[in-house]
Length: 73
Image (cartoon, rainbow, N blue to C red; front, side, top):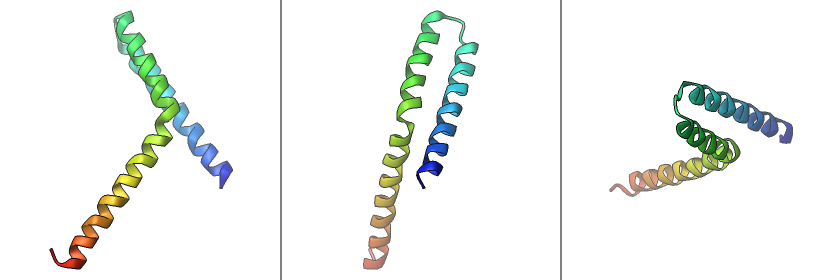
């Protein structure tokens, strides 16, 4: 399981880096490029935490909706 998760993480990191460089290449100003690089690196490092966070929120909202249906509200 760990090698699979590592492969998913590396694939996500590579995807984020490629998209960051592609976005920065289209930006004309150095200021815009520095913003893209800064946020791109933050997203590259922390994207798995965001995925887990949104998955937990989705599970909670799904359980709450199911609970309301079961109770007949």
